[in-house]
Image (tube, rainbow, N blue to C red; front, side):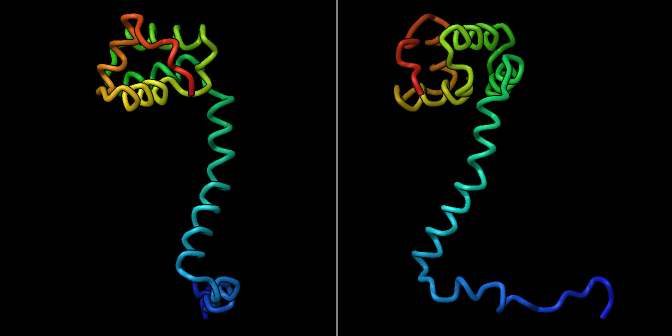
Length: 117
């Protein structure tokens, strides 16, 4: 056995899962995904900045000036922690618009009162 070999312990490691049904395994998977991602989501929520949020909007196709205006508006309303891109995407989905059209509507002063996460 060299230093790269590993004993086959698959059966031992999976013993606690052996009796679970496919549905139970599926639920366990999503429960674990939730546990893993919760700290990441919280970290992103509490450690964002206007610069990061502008960067997200730039990657969504908005110009620098548009991104700044959107981020400034969201910051004034205390919504920046929810993610500028996320809020624009949610608005697009709610209104049946493209992301671009949703952002333009916000830039034109529309739907700001509906931008609640």
